[in-house]
Length: 227
Image 1 (cartoon, helix red, strand yellow):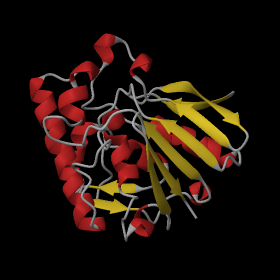
Image 2: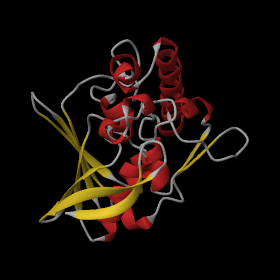
Image 3: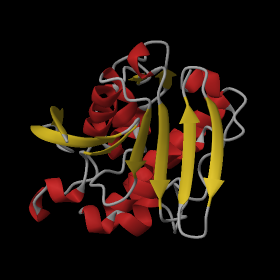
Image 4: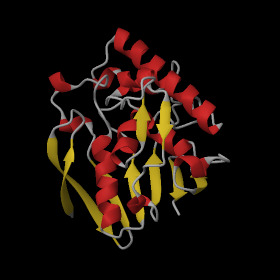
């Protein structure tokens, strides 16, 4: 078991852990268990720490990482994860996007040219056991937002922010992630991986990655091979 300093969903430094078996790793950092009930706030919670764990594993030479999607405190569609890997998310003024689900309504630019090359030779397996889409009445915000501390108004705000981000992804990369089964897992983190299957411009998003999707009746597993 490896322990590294990472950020929890509210940006506080904690000890994150991941285990290494052969050439693989599993990681945890952004879960509900990291927060007290009164601290839960998906408007500001970020998946940044999960990306930090992925990066730490990659720097150890791990070539396959299994990310279990579920029980997260976040609703940011994996944008915190991307930011921690060096991807720049900018608003209309060219300023860096803040962290958390509510901030997504302001994102205008996704710049992957600054992504850290250390992640370049890693296969990421994203595993989840739900088929919820990213947005809508059965999406990440509506179904899982309340357990993360979101009230009715918060759910509407978060769903609108995710919908905006999905439209930006479709405009930028030509892929509609809004209703992909499983894209709503872990606060929408799986939306980042859902871009992979069949996306002709995937190399623009994740360092010229090639993707394969394997589905079973109990889980969805997405494998992204990053060159």
